[in-house]
Length: 407
Image (tube, rainbow, N blue to C red; front, side, top):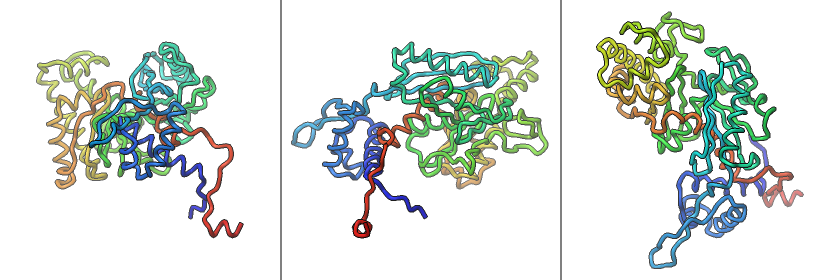
């Protein structure tokens, strides 16, 4: 049983968090609208909004007419209160982007790497410095640096990725050693998922699975609108390493028959190369996906791939019964847009009828920088949860009348 006492600061933080979260996700709203949506009194809303305006966290941004009364003042989170940086660590490059609190991208840079953890950390820190300088922002005004990486990320920011050879890499500590900006490290499928849930094709869904297909394959499972399912040790979501075919093709992780061995970008590209008689290159798959008239042999490979993907989605539907599945990632978004009908048909063949009928399979909306954008939302999520308050030095306890009498 949780016996922690509620403090005045806890209540204030929770109330401010509700107001900030509504403003951030709901856009321009009046004090009256906020009172209705948060169930706070008008007086509490006015007092807390007044505090946040004085702090520069919230600003007045126009007027809206009311029924016969004075126009109501509209409020929003002030875009320039602070800034956030997000990064996508892909197989051979890192993408680093800087945003304001309106999620307008102000600067971006792409840097190559050879997948050694030390070089990746160096490129991330270099990218952070570059975008901060390019945007003319003080590092002290950066709320945090979110980084989306392949593999399993522990709560301490240690990364394990069998596919890329990373074994207990302390990435958070490596980055903190080079900057005072707060660091947030998360699995890239989950950061892409957060971006799509907040701003893209997942918005409004309470039960959803956001799928990422690139060289690697992963999924972010959102349950009851309360965040991602992480399992006991934050390892959940490695959908690409579930078994599609017993003792099938060898996967990069060392196992056989993994889903990733059939729908990962490199494996699709190699099957295409063999089918059409061309040498394999990383550019072959995106080039063919962008080709209007495909060779018949390539069509067969893509149709087979859609079948593999649909079978994997059928498993997700049977396991989680989501209301929405969003296909994303460099490969998933393009393959999904072009072969969505085939993918849906394959999913229908492998899922139970009723759960499938209640699930909508769609394509992501945010494009190739969704992982970096989602990573940039990690410090924003922290800001919203804390109500924009700094750490408290000394909590003030709230006692019930009986507790006060005992004291």
